Amino acid sequence: MIRSLIQFTDGAGRGVAALNADGETHRLVAVSSIRSLALDAIAAGVTLLERANACRGNRISLEGVTILPPIDHPDPAHLMISGTGLTHLGSAEGRDKMHKAAAAGHATDSMRMFLMGEEGGKPDPDQEGVQPEWFYKGDGSILVLPGNPFAMPSFAGDGGEEPEIAGIYLNGPDGTPFRLGFALGNEFSDHVTERVNYLWLAHSKLRQAALGPELLLGELPADIRGSSRILRDGATLWERPFLSGEANMSHSIANLEHHHFKYQQFRRPGDVHVHFFGTATLSFTDKVETQPGDVFEVMADCFTLPARNPLIRAADEGLARVRAL
View 1 (cartoon, rainbow, N blue to C red):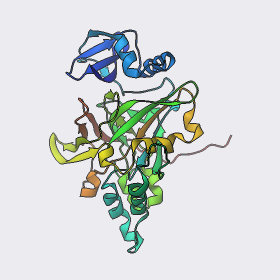
View 2 (cartoon, rainbow, N blue to C red; view 1 turned 60 degrees about the vertical axis):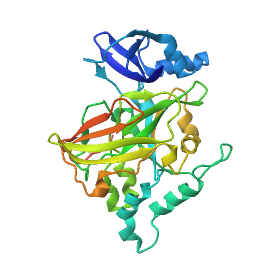
View 3 (spheres, rainbow, N blue to C red; view 1 turned 180 degrees about the vertical axis):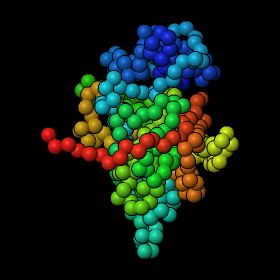
View 4 (spheres, one colour; view 1 turned 90 degrees about the horizontal axis):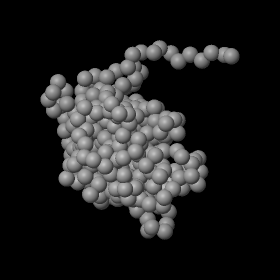
């Protein structure tokens, strides 16, 4: 039984492999990308799993190949990366600590947002729930290949991990959003910048992001158990478990999806969307200061392979100058 799909390149070019629950991998015949496979499934009126099963070929090994993100687009400008925050039980605690000093004893906006979600984030299927916090992160050009480094900008206050589950979507020819599956990810943000002023949250999110190698097919497990850790000089500097899935969230996946795709501009035919669902676990809340050379590793029980990326600092490009034309 196919559990997930993995994109890769080898000497023969691009390919897609199906990963079974028992760990076996099979190359999909005449399939060069998960997006093209999904478009074929939409056209045929079948599920992505059914289409993948129909293309399953010989067993292969993924040793020696280059693993790609589990989704991409020929034009990165047509892949949008976004996310929602304060969606997990306990997710307001760290954020609330960051902003409480400025609130003079009153409930912070972060806590109020979280409580709104806790009260109205899981509506009945035929009703609209409260909208979550939402942020834009970037287009497909910011996706880091599995195993490749995050480049923390020279102007960044820090570069911190955010272990999350991301929904992967493709808009059909008529604009209908199709969920292809889920990926393990590291949303990677600048928490020092965010802490200065909550209105800088938008700036803090304009960073790279990484996905684990696998596109998990089917429904997301309700209770996901994972771990997030930072390695420094080969030793574990920090490690904590993280929880995800709707049993550990204040919002339903359907509610998060509605409040993203209710905007018509996000339903452009052919576009791909990667949407991070949030987390409640951050090393920043434990006063960890990351540094170049650290390695972030995110694992979860419903994924075979981790999301693993080292941290580097990008060169200083100076002031961004605009020329009059």
